Length: 71
Image 1: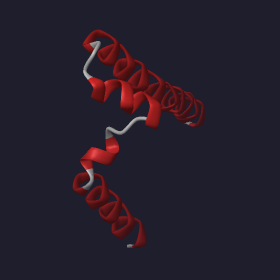
Image 2: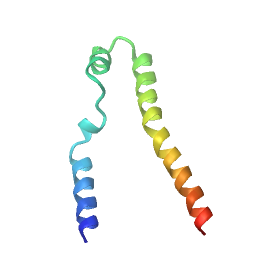
Image 3: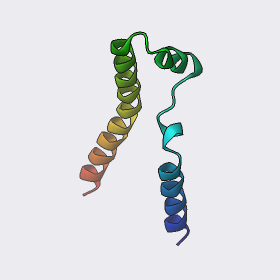
């Protein structure tokens, strides 16, 4: 029961604070807010998403192989 409550609280936190979920470091944010180079901003955001996704993909792959080995 505690896991469900914690998961619900985490989901509520993520849904209620979307601007913090898309935040970057202070210098990156200053460059992006200046609006000078939109292509650089798009590339920076894509890089952040890429760096964020790689650990999840790796953990998922390891988990899948462990699951298959245990089965």
